[in-house]
Amino acid sequence: MKKAFVTWITGQDGSYLVELLLSKWYEVHWIKRRSSSFNTSRIDHLFEEKDFTIHYWDLSDSTNLIKLISEIKPDEIYNLAAQSHVAVSFDMPEYTADTVWIGTLRLLEAIKVAWIEKTCKFYQASTSELFWGLEYNRPEAWYTEESPMHPRSPYWCAKLYAMWITRNYKESYNMFACNGILFNHESPNRWETFVTRKITMAVAKISLWLQEKLYLWNLDAKRDWGHAKDYVEAMYLMLQQDEPKDYVISTWVTNTVRDFVNWSFEEVWIELEWKWKWEDEKWYNKANWECLVEVDSRYFRPAEVDFLLWDSTKARKELWWTPKYTVREMCKEMVAYDIQIFKKQEILKNHGYEILEQYEI
Ligand code: NAP
Ligand code: G4F
Image 1 (tube, rainbow, N blue to C red):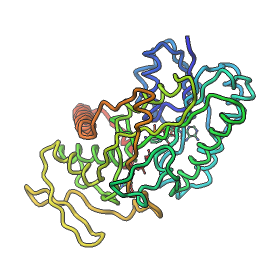
Image 2: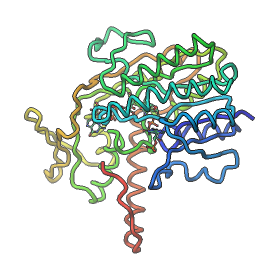
Image 3: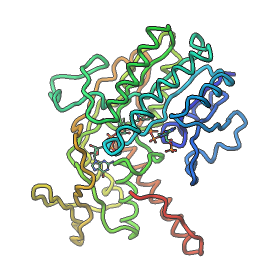
């Protein structure tokens, strides 16, 4: 039985990846950092699994990491943990660097210290936003693993280091270490501080009269959105190859945040009309002229990636990977899921149960 070490599974990707690995009979070592509140809702259903063990660790802690890696001696390590919010990285650049970049280095060193560099395969969660699309936004051109990189936030600068140190350990120590350059992927397990889930939760609440308005910032940003379930399969496939290689994982379809807002409202039969005056954009419900969406400068980023669309031919050819979900199907699934959870919460409230307001979204 293969052993996998997955950092971090309270997040979106970790929750799906662990499900996938358990279905393939892996012994999964699940890493979690200490939290004062419960944040395991995405994996609570797995607690009864016998091949599933939880350990405490934080990306800033080398000592416990070396102890864990030496004891477990995993066959595969998936490094998913990160302060992964781009806007927050402008507020906390030093913490972001320490955890995202030095955290990756700590993991690679721990593999060496445990003397498993020849047997353990390492996956690094790299990111699409190492590429800044705007300057390449030409329909006749497309971009691949080899395209020039231009990170636009402290988060992406840290991920760029993490990517290169992974490549460096592969070249220097002949390790099986690779980077998955994943474009945005979403799902009902996406945390609600990211734009798609923020939208689908707000739309669900608005449709149930539980929220009045949705506040957003850059509605024209374009993203190549896929489904996280498809993307964790690509992570797994990368570690099953004979050679470690970096792959772009994307759908090769791009849409604006504005499109995602429109599709989400369409799912609850609300038609919007927007009125625009510079940054003061407002969207109204055509049925009663209530204002439902507004632009809010609180979500401004000092530097923005406006456009993302990349070519994943290499992964499709070599990994036989192909996305199963379209972005519209995913949007539909997310809105339906959110309506269901808020309906359940309302029923519980009406029966006198106290529901903790978990999120500031
Ligand atoms: P996510 O939902 O934000 O999950 C990140 C996880 O990292 C959370 O479980 C978080 O734990 C943990 N974490 C944060 N700081 C930590 C620390 N100091 N020590 C240990 N763990 C820490 O992210 P995701 O969407 O699943 O993405 C997984 C990885 O892929 C991330 O590295 C992300 O940067 C990268 N990525 C994501 C996308 C995407 O579109 N989703 C695209 C490209 C790359 P808590 O729950 O305790 O906060
Ligand atoms: O959903 P987002 O916060 O995702 P972003 O910044 O693209 O980063 C995500 O994908 C990366 C991969 O490409 C990962 F590496 C990273 O860890 C993360 O998972 O924002 C998407 C777009 C941005 O242009 C943002 O400015 O939506 C725009 N946006 C507009 N209003 C907003 C909002 N984003 C957020 N989070 N909240 C808003 O209110």
